[in-house]
Length: 345
Image 1 (cartoon, rainbow, N blue to C red):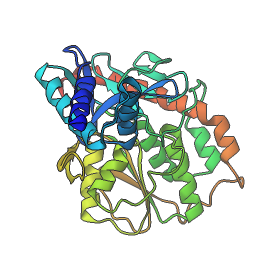
Image 2: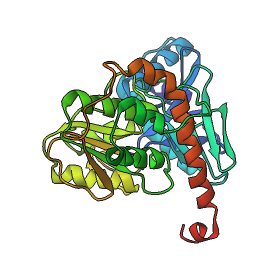
Image 3: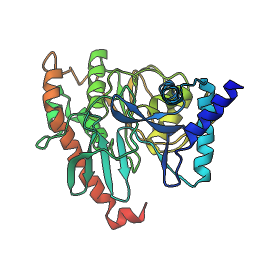
Image 4: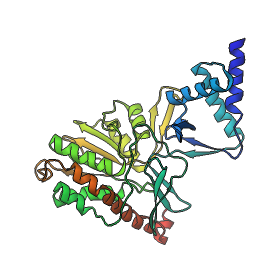
């Protein structure tokens, strides 16, 4: 009986705050996200994560002095979704690193710093503002530097000494990677020497979506692992690849086009669809072509950077490179507002 009373008390404690005007966030795999306090900062986390479950149990114990099991939290989350839908609450899509707000025709790039800042880009320019709600910041997500004016992508070409033809593919990828309102690009880095390939992949990733440690480079074994990978980062990297299974090709094409693809998920949801748009980098050997991806082969033409360790120089130009990418994005946002493009939405 005591256990039953504690469970009922937890449900009352957990469900009481639901208001009609409240907004809830759903991830690309259908998981519910809620706010928690992490070291004095507000974070959105998936409710089926161990972090959220521990947070809910700890706070319930602090408020009531009572203990319930993890299964109670999961059942309460399911009840919360039902109650929120019954009250007509809003459900919005959670974002990782990048969010496009159609009403403003503006893109927000989450810098993930202690000041909760983001770069807001419109057709008139970009500025540093407080990040809007709805960003998921997994533990793997690293901080982006504040962008600076005065840079160009040619600085990256000079730093890495990439030949013009191959750099065209790199430039094409960086110019379109943040344009989430349309099909985003993908890049295949083919048959490069391991050190050069890893260097190029790492720099492209860190320009837009740096990680504290390399989670996105792992090789997913199935759709569920790829969905989890794509839910916790913005730029999806798979390296090294020695073949391209049909299911990977299908999923990658879906990611770049914002097309839902079906996965099986173990947990609260048996079967879900991943819905979201993500740029993709595939790197390895003899990777077949994929619709929507451009291929660069650096095995013969690229001998690597002219200096042994380009990392310090890259960190110096990194803010200017990010600023150059945001300036290129301004033109894409301007095009989106033109009559021809507006009619095609």
